Length: 174
Image (cartoon, rainbow, N blue to C red; front, side, top):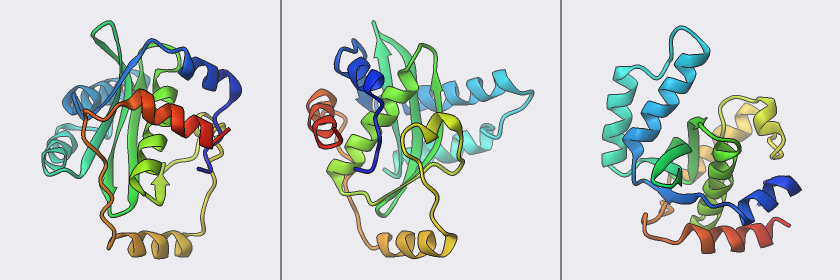
C-alpha cells in the first residue's frame, strides 16, 4: 500500500484497453524480457539456463507473470519469484507505452490482496523510483524475508478478475 501511482498513470489504468492477465503466458513474458534486455546490450543475463529454471519454478507455482494484452498480442509484462511473503521481481518489458507500468501496478494489487509483505525490485532505477521505491537496510530485509518464509500467501488463480482487483487497489492507494 506504500505504492505511489502517479495521477497520469492512474488515469491511464482506469481507461486502459489492456486485458491484464496473470500466469497465462509465462514463457512469452520471460522470452520478451530476455529480448528486451538483449536489444539494449549485446548479451542478457536471462540466458537459456535461467529461462529453463524459471519455467520449472513456474510449473511448481513459485514463479509468476503479469501480462498486458492488446487485441490478442502480448504487449508488456513482468515476471518474478514468490518466496513466502516476498515477491522478487526479476524483469519487465514493454512493447507499447505504459504496459510495464500497468503490469507493475496490477502486480502490487495482486500482492496486496494476497497478503505479500515485501516486493523486492532488486535494482533501483528512475522507472521504479516514481512508484515510491525505497531501500531497506540489508539486515532489516533479511529479517523480514526470513520471517515471511513461514507464510504462504496465494498469488492467485489466473481467472481472478484483474479489473475488479485494480479498482479496489487504486481506491486504497489514492
